[in-house]
Length: 380
Image (cartoon, rainbow, N blue to C red; front, side):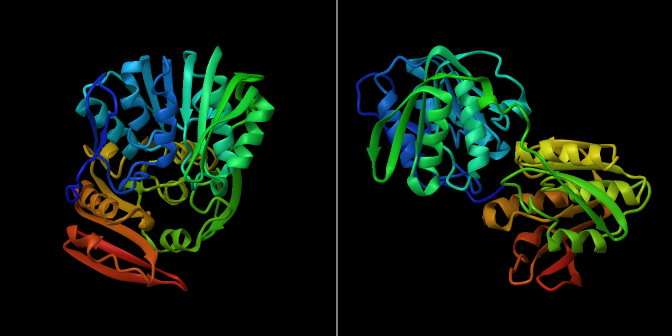
């Protein structure tokens, strides 16, 4: 596991309930080093309110749901990240609160309709969430409200506040600013004019491309890595890695699944793909289907979803932006699921030094060099 990170502590200003809340975070989870000001703004607005059936969309590590649990009839937290979901579950247990955590895209057009209606919904989009996806999540959240329910959304102007407010104005019955602080605005909206904003179609696009003479079709979505076209690093990795008939193949950090699709087309192999992001795996499932590949797709943190399996070939274009902790967990897990004699193929930008993160392997060599990327072959 990664080095232990000290938990964040949030004190209570009232005599009711616990005097402090403890939250465990991790590299790769938004606002891991300090509480999100937008979530704190939402907490203050909801603290004295009877939240009834409360839903939080895009939960980071569970702050809003955990703190407000005693003021709610029931709490459900939703996040598209398996790593974040695990922190939410740990923090509900750590703080001894009753809450349900759901790993989902937050898009009704992908997840299906929410099973129940909520009296209160809180949504604080991550700053780097593509506006198109954020607005779709907002409309889906609004559609999950009871007829007299209220939605709260916190954002900053540079993170799309104006676009979110416009979307609410077109989809909600009423919209108003409920609070402001430090550049953040908390919007309060009631009523929904139409389910999912009248846009039931899922947000997926298509890429038609050829890799090493193999025609492939990929399903993509806004916000996924290389959503517009297959990136050079992934292409170089596909062209370099060798896959044989009968291999057990894992596309690790699969995104929308290009490596899994390619492997399944060039060899009669057992294909698996896994990613932390539920939207990415939803796209990967569609990619395999569109490319005529029979495979399994798992939404999980690093290799947690395939830890009981062994693979002859692992291909990975890792999220190098996610931090050392994520990379250390990722490659340690990759080494653990590699079968005896197996090979792990990794592509990364030439300017990056991943030797420390790849320390879980006994042998690592550079086997291909492109204009911007290198492919490393790692063995146990």
